[in-house]
Length: 230
Length: 230
DNA sequence: TCAAAAGTGTTCCTCTTACACCCATGT
DNA sequence: ACATGGGTGTAAGAGGAACACTTTTGA
Image 1 (cartoon, each protein chain N blue to C red):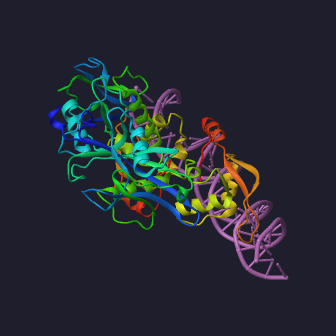
Image 2: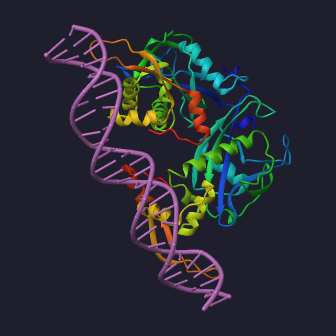
């Protein structure tokens, strides 16, 4: 059976999402240094080493190619169509990652990447391989999941205003949200700590109170069978 | 990079669920003919060939090992912990399959399997490798998904009574369902065709009307943004 | 004092839940 | 006639959606 599949290799790819108030949701892409698809944009990723787990492989590749460290990582889907890579049979396990304060992360290009850049998910370049398909699946997943799991907080700073949270949800869900209803629902979940701190005013307007996501509390509630849902 | 991961192989595993009125939900397992885990029960599956897609690999292995053909197949998750197989690094992509009328499928053992058998998911044997973990994930997925996608019908005969459907849902969700509310909700979705046919009576009791799942109608409604939810 | 953004309550309506009796058949 | 399972309606409560004014600050 070694013979039957000697040519199959395994890679991991990462779809890293970030969020900025005035930018919306962006994804991290690298420009390929080598053929195939030289100079095209692609998802960061690479071969899995023999003694590392899949998650370790994703983190290592992200570190090598972009210098980024993520705190939320979730397996998305595996892609294995026979001709998805023109060189050889490659099966890729895609991971979805979320990072805080996207645009302030220091990006470094390296190894297989000649540059690294954030792209707004509504304004993507042409992508190498089947990465468009993978990215679409990732966007779907985030949009669906943000409604029933508190992953939105992984995209915001530790401290955030209610307006920030609301804008993030509007950006992800692609529709307007009623401020009052949203606040009611979110506060009703009792997973936000209200801080004794106000946002620094930018221009006019009443300063907003800052909040923090209470993960411990969320896990408690989850165990009691109380559902997060927006 | 060929060197780095020359030892990694790719397999697919299938979690095949079936349902019988008096049995509940069962999963299809095979008894391993060879070491490691000789004579232990395991999920059917095997190596992916170089020129077949992952789905094709699952279908082929199921055919070879159990003689079964499935009509619903969905990728579940990929398992790749470095030591999940004692022989070598193996990454396995698990697929969830549903079949109709579980106990009437003719099972044949073959290739790597000395026997094939259905096991009720509440009464499982010890499993080889990390297959217990995989199976748990599959059960989770089915239980969650049955609530927001009409996959339950894949486990029933084409024609079924409302009582059958209700029992299936109770079995999957693990709790009682109010007959009247359930019927109201399900009928409200307008995805069931009421047939001019009654179940053959078994013993006493009023015969039940038969229904059929209207997949076309479901897909229409889905496109109109109408959600299935139980 | 005006413009800009934050904060707050109430009403209506829909959907969910709880609940009990009649109907058709076999024995 | 009775036992067994199938089929149906209603009322109360909870949760979601729609909606507008007041407060605090900077300019």
